[in-house]
Image (cartoon, rainbow, N blue to C red; front, top):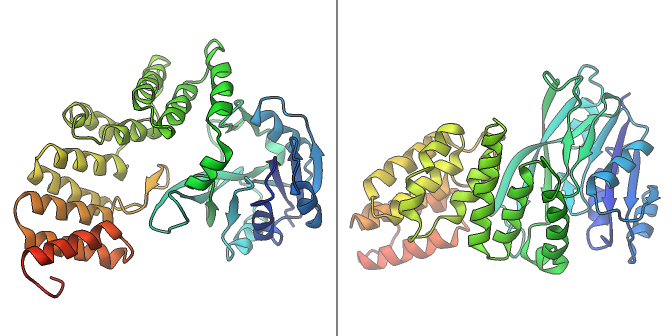
Length: 373
């Protein structure tokens, strides 16, 4: 039987850790927890689940802390999570079954990232991530912050990967969490240290852009995301789709629409199948008053759908959000009946979609109808 080790790093996570460990207690054979200085009840809670606690003074590197835990693990497989994550309750058996497979290096799962004030299944970003890997293949983490799993050179060109129908829910991007932890100052200190390293990874500039965007400093965010794109090109690598997503998300304003429309087609060409970029183009066209063109783009979004897990995808960009924006376009074309049909269809797909409900109500009143179109 393939033994599975949970590896985590924690600090002051008493608000989340029980939910996380409860979700995986029937999946893993051991829990290896690296604590970097908790002063609350985190360690005591972990111990009630039989976890092995490793204490390590914080060295300013998330990768170092994760790798320290890997050294203590004894399982055939490593499952790594954060304390503010939770494994979907019915998925445990899928991991146990997959752990019996012998000729696989990596397993990917779906990660659902909640955003906003409270968990809302319609306000999520979804992406596939490597979260399970063979312990004896030489996998290690790199980067002080926003650490990534490095695939060793011995299998880099052809790792054997399996995608599991497993979901992990991530709560760390909820507004209350980002406000509570006030991560900006800490993260920027670590990122500036990385930035000072000669030939550093261009992801550093991307993460700096993300931090600035989170606090509303759009000018600095755009500067650093463009710098990241240029650095990837300079080292002859295709800039990852995340960079373009962040860039054009920040340019979804009427005063930037014309500028963004000059370059977004290149990003769409670079990352065919990424519905979010197509969706952003549709919004930009709508902002620019090009409603017929925008309608064609939103139809393309609906044709594409949201099934490409390679990219971080906002739920609805290939379904109810595209229908909603079709309604906005029809309003721009002064076709309220068609707009109402689009808003109504968006609501059939996402009944709690407040913007669609409000606009549908407004359109129905404007055309003197008492029942949905």
